[in-house]
Length: 264
Image (cartoon, rainbow, N blue to C red; front, side, top):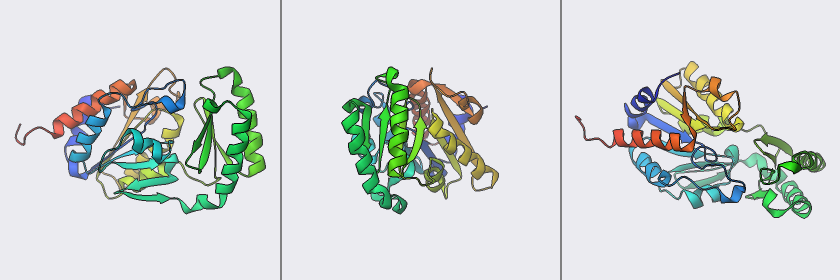
């Protein structure tokens, strides 16, 4: 484990050679009962804009669709990888993983079926590429939702991704946050990823692999802890911060250090 001072130093020593990747829900935005109500903490857009201006690359890597991310963090120069990398926008170029196309009809049919059987605030369609069922607003429905999701996914030939209080039905392709992480940090010497949930563990593992392979000179894995953080998080990261506010405080320190006049 390293401390905050060492993390700030690592991320600011060579700003133009540094890539910073950050999860959205639970990291920049606190968890809320209804997924559609999630918003970044006040102060997040400003510090992300400052970091974009000062670092070689800054990107959001999330299970959210790009439309949601760009609506709530509309920052020029910020990279986005949505739906665990199934869609992305780097430098303004929007790309959808070609492997999802054969499954779009099945996703649409599954989404329509789920919307007909569950309350609307429990069903989150994601850009026509996947659909997530949430039971945070109705924990008593957890078993019913999981069973329904499994039945629908099997009948429509879709995969299932289980996360905290949610299950996502998606094209059955091998993709997780390791994939966009690998692509986004390529060519940089220093890379960091900040995240809080099971879906972020592959990104942390990928940074460790890239460091071991010599493709990174330094990797910093920042765990954002909450009462719901998975037990595996502590062993997967180099630094732990206290919730989204703790991450925001860290990012502000990094932005302030980069913004200091040369020689100070």
